[in-house]
Image (cartoon, rainbow, N blue to C red; front, side, top):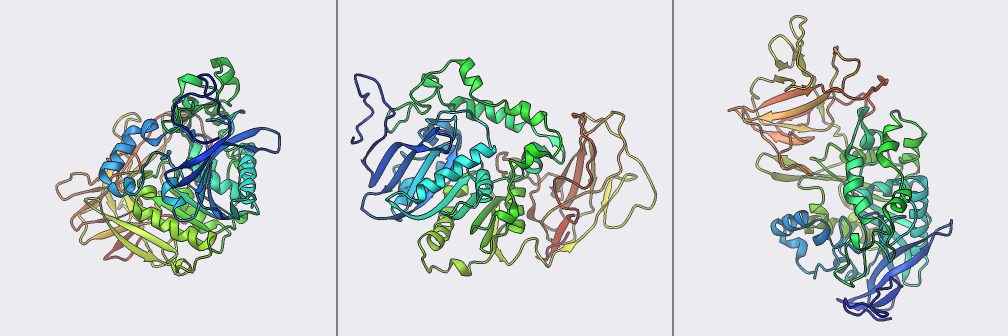
Length: 518
């Protein structure tokens, strides 16, 4: 069946049957069935070169509905990115843009086949939604192996995507699918407990809100309550229209499941990678400004994954932007060209670490490094002085206490003005002695930078345009560093030995005159 326009078929009904045709220089297969090992059939869209041949595959598997246009599902993010980065939209009709996955028009022209799979229970794939579960990871494995043996595939499958489409790459790579040849994880957390559901042991409510806003709205069976693809006119959530009760039965209660597992137990470990099994070549791209979710996964992967071929890139800007800009896309292309197409393009000589060092005013300076954490780091301790509210290089002269209202503004400690330009690069940790009038307390600590006139120097974060100092950046001479803390009442969380959020060896890292310190 050839692709028609958006007009209904079969007496006015759209069908969601597999169909193929040629558009915009690509051979496109819509709603291709992929059978799982339990008999469930998932649906995928395949974009590949119009010519005959065998091509490497760029595959993604996730919940955001493969037929939902980026421009319609996330209009503000698209408009901002398109306005500020015209290279994102250049050279493409942008009709096939989809949230947090590659634009097939920019990859098919380089002899790649792009496969988008709707995950179980989402978009056009039926089933029960159970995010990051072993069942979902096994589905991902089966999709990789399916793509590796198709007649248009050269047998090498690469994975690429942002956020969800990156997180699950760590998980499936732990299973070592035979046809998986390389992964590109763009801003992807890894550890379900430490990175995602219990930051430092504190409950994170992000996932419950995300579930309501970004998953339930594209659940299989939403019918006309969902959107239609602007490309082919089909409903993006499949041909069925299910009632609310049935939709609820077809998904786990994610928020409840997270709340029911306050400790790092089997539930969390089943949804986290095994780093000694992640041996595939990997390109890990982190965002300095995304501390609330993703960066730890990207850094931990680079440090801990068993792969002999791994690279770390760290940038600023919004969560999704540089995945689509020429800066990010060309790095991804060189990486995949080397490992999926066998091109001798110098990627094997690429520095293992590329840092976009941030300066005030959203200025970034690229710097290549050989390792992470940086070996030349000067690990430096600062001490909180409760008597005068200062952050000092030396210990306080005498013991003192400082009290504050848990739901108030907290407390702030400030350094003296810095004598010279100072770079902060790397992990930060704090050791505190605290008592509380409540049975339990959650502590939130923030490292901030202030100008000489005591105006905060904020940065564009992964989401928030007014984000405190990220993990790396340069503070100008006479600036001041501040650490602030609040203590809102939280759910009961037993004290855990060692921090569940970072390593015990982590501490403040600053650098003077380009020499990293901590």
